[in-house]
Structures are given as structure tokens and as C-alpha cells.
Length: 80
Image (cartoon, rainbow, N blue to C red; front, top):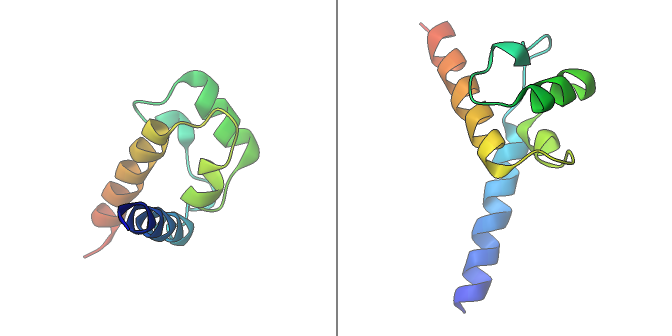
């Protein structure tokens, strides 16, 4: 039963990543905490969401967390 709940939690987390959009023209070079290799890869591929970014080869869960934090802070700075 614990296994099933864990899988359901993972599915929910994945859905949330799909909902979190990455703005067009997002400047990956300005994101602190990502390696230059990942910045270049993300800038080249230009994923539309964190879910898409998470499926790119070489993108780690830590990199997704850094992107999520950056996107949330951008969201807060643009909302009144």
C-alpha cells in the first residue's frame, strides 16, 4: 500500500511539473546553480515546461529544483 501511495505522489508531482510553464525567451544563462553544459542544453532545446525540461537527457532533479525556484521567484517579482 505504501508503494502505491508513493507512485501516486510521483504522478501528482509530474503533473505539477507539466503545469509550470517556462516563459518564451527565458534566460538560462542567468540561472545560478546550473552548470554551463545544462544552461547551453536548455537554451538550445527551449522546453516549454518543467516537465519537458525534466525529460531532457542529463537534466537532474537538482537542476529542475533550481529552475523551479528561479521561476517562482520571477513569478513573485512580476505579480503586484
